[in-house]
Amino acid sequence: MLFLWIKALHIMALIAWMAGLFYLPRLYVYHARPQTGPDMSETFKVMERRLLKAIMNPAMLVTWATGLGLGYMLGQFSADIQIWFALKLLLVLALTVYHMALGRWRREFAEDRNTHTERFYRFINEVPTLIMIAIVILVIFQPF
Image 1 (cartoon, one colour):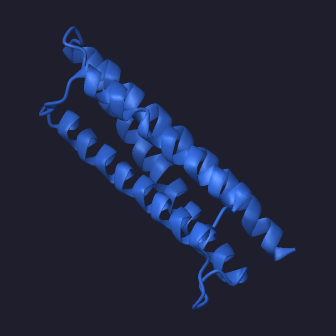
Image 2 (cartoon, one colour; image 1 turned 45 degrees about the vertical axis):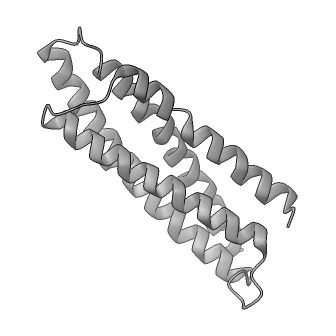
């Protein structure tokens, strides 16, 4: 029963984390627009900080903690780790690096030092979708 509760918590945290990974760069798209005035910029700064600090960071930590716990409970960390699981971990690590990049860009916006264009943020907004697709395929089909 504990396993199912951990799994449920893992899925809930993952959904919250992914929602943030999809939404935060979208906020950056609007924040990077040249016509964004100082009042709107300050509003974006508050929204971005709250999303990252209050939702995304805790969700990422819970996703990692419960995911590692589930992996341990399922014996995935044995000497003969399955390739699909190792690839999944690498992709989750890639999402974490992406998350950290979003945090760095948020600090740049907060300090009025953004150097990226609206188009750049539109492009990087697609990254978590591609990684998520690969992770879901690995987990469902376990091809290796």
